[in-house]
Image (cartoon, rainbow, N blue to C red; front, side):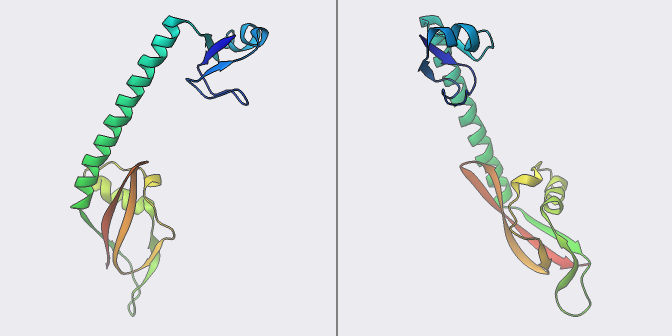
Length: 148
């Protein structure tokens, strides 16, 4: 029996995939648990519509990320932090949540997990910090770390 999977099923297939399984497995497990639907012309048409809708949503999300990238590209953040009197070493460090808060003050809502910092910034200076807006879109925000 051929079925269309509604969800990912281990060792069987991924969501939206058409797979051939034994009749009993489909009737007794997959279909009653809502993991799959029988392969019919109506279900196949619904699957195609879902794929088109998902494609449109992904394109829309990418377009929004591109627009946000343009806004971030022209932005320069200034973070004032406590630093030692001599040298450029900070008492603390500048982390992703600090940068996310500064972006929020500028009117851009960016998740702190999207900001990519290998290690916290521990000295004064100018840094370009990458921000992952979409799997295919990455922006760089200029961060000025200055003494308070």
